[in-house]
Image (cartoon, rainbow, N blue to C red):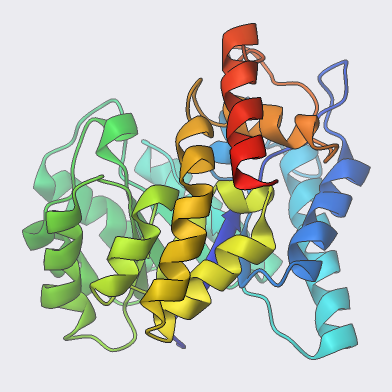
Length: 304
C-alpha cells in the first residue's frame, strides 16, 4: 500500500433549491478539483452532509460515488495521473461501519475514512475493536480522529495499537492539538514509513508539514484546490517560506470557512464565487447575513 501524501478535498454536496442533489454541479466541482491539481478526493465525509443523504442501494450516495469514480477514471485516462478516492465510511454502529467499508471495497475506491464512533462514547477497548472490525474488510483504512464532533479523543497510545492492525493506512488528525499530532508523527509516522498523518484542519496544515506530516484533508480546497495543493507540495519539499506565504494569504479563509459551521460556511463561500454549492438540508441552514459578510471579507482579503 503506497503512502498518501498531498491535499485531499473533503467534497461538499451541491444541492438544488428544492434540496435535491445537484449531480451536474457535483460533477463540475470534481472536474474543478482535478483541473486544479488536487491530490485526491474525499466524498461522503462530514462536509458532504452525509447524514442527510439517502444511502439505500442505487440512490443518492451510490450515484455520487459513481460520479466520482467516473470522473477520476476519465482524468486518469486523459492525463495518466492516478487520483486516490477516500470514501467516508463511518458510523457509531460497528455493524453499519463494516457495511459502509464493504460498500467502499465493492465500488473499488482506494481507501475508506472511518471516524471514531460518536455520541455513544465507547471505551478505548471499544474503539479498538471497532477499528479491528473494519480493518478485516480488506481495504486500506484512514482513521478519523475528531473529538470535537465525536466526544472521544483517540489518544496516541490507542492509535499506536490501532496502527498495528492490518490495512490501517493512516490518520486524519483533527484533534486540534499540535502536540498530539507531533506525538503521532514521532511514535507512528516515523516508525511506519507507509503510515500517513494528515491534518483534518486547514489552519494546521503548515505546522503539521513542518513537523513531518503528510498533508491535509481540506475543506477550503473545495474553493481553492490549486492553492491548497501548492501549499502542501511546497511544505513536503521543505520550501516552508513559500508555503507560509500561501498559508498566511489563506488564513482569513481558514477561519471564515468555519465561522458558521461546516459545510454551511464553505458552501456560502462557493456560492459567492459562482461555484455550484446551492442549499443545505436541515438541520443545517444557510449562513446569516453577518456570517456572509465575514466570509465575503475573508475572500476579498485572500484575493479569491
